[in-house]
Length: 413
Image 1: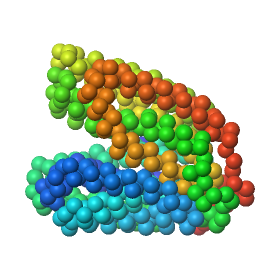
Image 2: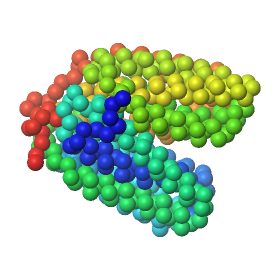
Image 3: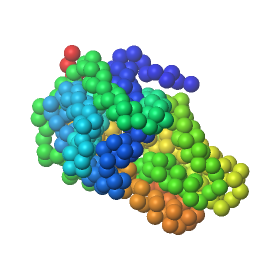
Image 4: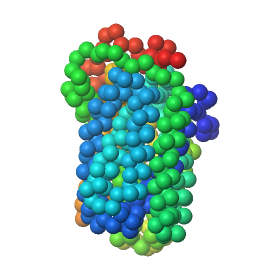
């Protein structure tokens, strides 16, 4: 089994920064809903509206912030955005109304989206092209480890159920982004791109890349499937115990932590990435079929189908992640990594924002037929991704005179 820690150097430092803020995020994810209702005093519908608006703003802001990372240098941009994210989380400690909450949430989502794009540009500048997918696999493993630790801390706050405990969780999250910024400062600076030919935001005119991003967004519906769709299905349509939701979440995060690096090892270019995504589509179809079998069956059958489906789900997730990382980077022109990754990363936001509505309609509204339709959608998108990525690769044009990220020319000491 590959080492869980990446090699010493920039990749390990990036992983340490990822671990630091993911611990805070893990605590935030499990406590935020109750914090905003019990402490801030907002109605659940207002929380949902505010977060939806905030992430819509964040998804749009990711592209220009990624562009700034390219032009001004990704390390400095990432450090500033990590500090801005920490400040946004800290502001949640004092907001006590909807409009201040909305402003803080917009700052949080915008800074998070920009930080993700800037860190991808930073990775591209510090890691050789052929090593990026492996580096991202290590970061994903680190992310899951941090989320698991943070979720445990959040669980302690939930058990205490006091205002002080909730406030402590948000303070930890804010400090985690400060730690992230300090760790990022230990990395070498990556030279900014002084000038690029073409449109100011070229990604908005790159139709092949837009189609790739759209297909990837469809495949990313697996994210709310685990956090929203499956829990609702288990509680409303099966005889399985509700604690199984937590057990399946632990199964997923642990498997990604242990096996994502190995899974990504076979992905080395556009061809292997397309094959990995096609395999993930087939696994996702089988996943949805297994979950469909759990409805209206005896408890032992339901539990067996849900566990089996969850194993297939995490296998498909790891293949899809590795393939999409490779495609997203390989199709981004040199010098525009931050801009393109800001656009590609918006798929995560869209999937998390619109996914719950779609999954609720399909699974709770249509039952078994909804599961099969969802599985067919995953399969179709995964097979289309191969064709579209080849088309995009053929039409890709590198800007002249721009040094390729990952080489010595792209770095400054």
